[in-house]
Image 1: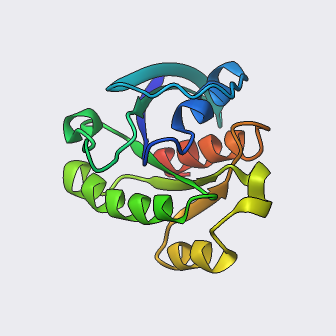
Image 2 (image 1 turned 30 degrees about the vertical axis):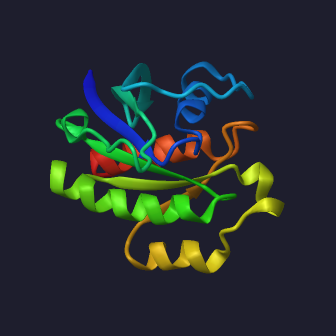
Image 3 (image 1 turned 90 degrees about the vertical axis):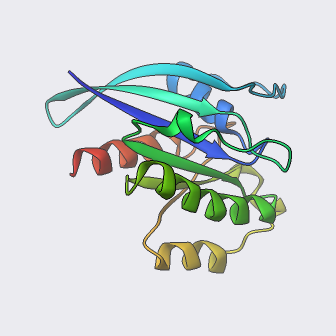
Length: 165
């Protein structure tokens, strides 16, 4: 069995914890609970006859008062940057965090989750914003932790990229 550490990072309240809960336990809660420090979950998946154990590190949301602890990112095989489509500034924060990630762990596969696609009518992001980051080589997946849309796809893309497939 192969083990891969994946960190989810982004601004506060973008849905990191909800994405992990949807993926690991197929649940969603409307109650907002701030992550303090880091929450770790595990899920095993099969990919091309390989068993892969994902160790998912849900890092506390970054805001102006607390910075992502780069020590949490050490040993990561992949990073999922999460932005909330209803809050434009969270995409800007994800772009800034990408630089911190690269400084902390080097070049590892990154996927950008544009979360809350169930609220697309309220989005402050447009297709041009996603196209700009895709033009820089980012993999972008629209997700909704609430409905489950894109969640399996996002993690499947991450696993394939980590395995070099």
